[in-house]
Structure formats: structure tokens, C-alpha cells
Length: 488
Image (cartoon, rainbow, N blue to C red):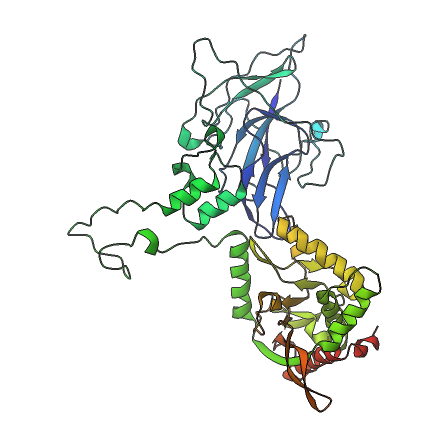
């Protein structure tokens, strides 16, 4: 007899307590294999595919795409196990009521409680106990197949856009027994495949359930969202004589049309950035100092390195090597403050974060053990993490644990900035664009490649003299790269 097991949203690590469902990878009635990804979720750190630790037939899904679920909340229920009976054919179990997006839980058999991300001890052959992609059994996941019930004679074929709810009984004769159950359109999954379409709808405040897709089988396309966003919103009902306008609202009711305000939810990456920056401003008494430096010699040194035929060295990698050397001379800036213990914790390793702008927002990947890497190794690691950031495949571990951040905002064409410290770090170095400017060089006016460097630091960990010494050393290495050779 098949057993219905409940798989819950696992702990994704790094203190994350919730995740948003971006895309379901399975539907009710699908057969899943052990460690097969069943849902794609977005946390405050990254996009993650969550695999199911055991195989069987999906009997129910919980949560709609775009909905946030806390860790430990049910994701899906799966019917696993072999049938009863002398011939291996068991009688069908009573229907399991469940809509396609998880309205109600299975009624019979009752789901057995299972720890998040772990299969029962006696189901070793049915589950691996793993919850993250890249871990667990090495066997290839079986191809997903849809188990559809046979329509009774004379019955109308279901709409291609209608959600499917399939209560599943025990596996009989090698196939699960599936009974069809009608579900209202409003309770089914939204016919959207592309996460970009969902993001666009969220940014424009559109409810995808109110849209009719123009794609195959009613699929909602980007053009449908853009068309709906340009249509005028319905006029609000007229206020009665006893209805008072909201405080701050314009006379005549809320505005509609092109001039209407737009509300963007602060969640996901944007919400995490907002919380971290706000906490930084609340807790850290920061100060900023800056200096202009002649980067002509540094640019010439990089050109000479790249002309030697070895792998190309990036400018960011050279700046990272300079930062690491400066932190070795001023370890106060590679630290954090333990407020509860009222202590400054100086850290022995340098895990260098760098700001990267992506379609999902600003992220800060971390290069582990930057102090032990060469310029060539740093170049390769920067390239790898930047590509992962652009594709949204960064893991939470790659976005946390930094001890110092390097922010190259010069790529945006600006000269200077006052960076906000990446809490709980103690400092951030900002680098502006490198542009030709008039500069006094060896007593004469000349056109040189000039860059502005700015350092924001936590005034609790050091005074201005230490911060100034750090920044001056960085500027000296930029102007005369040979200074750096003394510490290599």
C-alpha cells in the first residue's frame, strides 16, 4: 500500500527563515525520482532549486508561485511505496482531496510526519534525506512523466489552461491509480513559465490571475503583461457623503492612469539589501575619507602583465591585491564589532566581497581566502562569481561571510561615492572611474589617468589616523605599483 509522505521546505542555511516560490517544476500526478528538483525558490540570498529526498507520485502541492513560505511549511506530498496484495495489485485508496496549489491536505491515508528534508529510517530505498541540489545520490533523476486519468466516455476534455488536481491511490500494476478532481480556475497555478514575466508583473503591480495569456494553451507572455500595464485601471467607486478621504490622498480620490503611484514590495534580494543597509546605518558610526590618485603607472603595469602572454589580469584583481596588502598593515579594518560582548573581533583571514549589479539587484559575492590568492587566481574567481551572479546561481554561502568589501562603482561612470558599510564588516573601499585629467607629475603639468578612492570605516574599530594610513597606502600602491612588491 502506498504511503503518503509530506516534504517540507527545508532549512536553506545562513539563517534564512522563508523563501518565495518562483516556479513549480512538478505538477500533481507527476512521478518524481529521488533528489529530483520539484520547485525553484528565491531567498534573500539567491535562487535555489529544492530537490525532494524521496521518489513517488506527487499527490498535492502547497503554495502558489509568488507566495512566500516559512521554513518547515509543507511543499508537496508524495505517494511512495509498493502495493499490497498477493499479485502486487492493491485496491485503490480513497481519493486524496488536494487542489493543484495546496489548498487542503490528504485525507487518507494520513500523512506521516517527517523531519524537514529527511526520509523515514525504514524508507532508505525511497529517499536520500538530502534537500539541496548537488548533494545526495549520484543516480540520474528519472525523466518526469505526467500521469493522466482516462476521461470517461462522453466527458468533455479539460481545458488546456485549467489546473489539474489528481488524488493518487496506491501504485497498482506499476502505475499509480489516479482519479480526476475538478478545481476552480482561480485556485490553479498561473500559466506562466518565465520568471522574468513574473518579476515584470510584480514590478507593475499586476495580478497574473486576472490576465488571459495569448501564448499556447493560454500561456501568459511578456507582451500580455506589458499590454495590461498600459490599460487604464478601473475607476474607484464614488465616495459617499460619510466617507472621508485618506490622509495625504489627493482630492477626488486616488490617482489612476500613467500618473498613478507604483508600489514595489521590499522582499527577496531588494528586501535583504534594504534591511542590511538600514541596519548598517542604525548600528555603525561610519565616517568616510577619500583621496585622488594617479593610476597611470598601475594601468601601464597591467598592460605589461597582459602583454606577457599569460592569462589576462583584471584591474579589479590588482586592486584586490592592494587591499589585501593594506589590510595586513592595518588589521583593524578587517574586523567586526561584537556588541553583546563589547569587543572588537579582528579576523585572521580576508574574505573579500565585491559589489555586483544584476537584474535581481545589487549582490555582494565573497572571494574566500583572498589573502592567499595571486592576481591571476583573483581574476578567475571574480569572473566565476560575477557570471554566477548574472545567472542567479549564487548560493547563500557565496554571498555571506565577507570581512571587507571592494566596491568598483567606476563602472557606472561616476567619480566618487560615500559607500555604506556591508554590515557586520568594518570598512569598504570605493573606486571611481579612471579618466584622463590634468595632473602635476614630476613638477610639470601633464595629462594622467586619475582615480578617486574613498574609504568608509567603522569609527568604533579605529580612528581617522588608521583609516587615513590605510587609504594612503592604497593610493601609494596605485601610483607606484613597485611599492606593493615589498609585501609580496
